[in-house]
Image 1 (cartoon, rainbow, N blue to C red):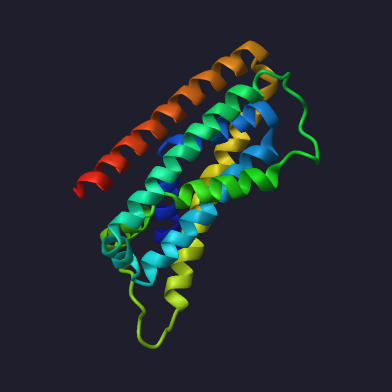
Image 2: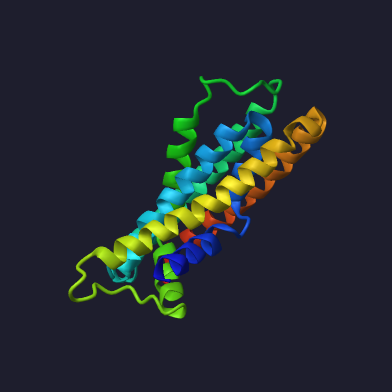
Length: 211
């Protein structure tokens, strides 16, 4: 039961369509399934990492070092703006078929680091763990077995969402025209850059004012 709850948590954390979801959709449409799932796998790995911190009770580190968290937020915002620019540049070229040379490793790493740029995620995991009755504690007699079950469930739940999203989107790839793909890429890049700018401005303001 705990494992299923953890999978549900991972699914709920991943499902809201934010900048990572837009990246996954855009890469699946433009480059195919492998590029899309590499993006999702990076996000799922970062979710599992923050889920582990939450399960082991490290949420206090986020509140203890607010300036560090805000710095990561600003860096993540800058990275989002950079990714938006790369999307626009990438769409200037013709859409090519997916090959073994596709930079899936780079997509995984960039998404992993981007997801890690929001350390407040660990607080979300703690809150959800508590809400579903899976309190993040190191249970006596079980050592770290329960936290690892929770983290594995979170990872698989998140990965399940990214598999569905990238698989469904890449299946539509042959039915979507080049002009429509470029239009979706432009909308995605605008939305991602807007999110990044808001993240930079809000993080910078809070860092300067200390609020």
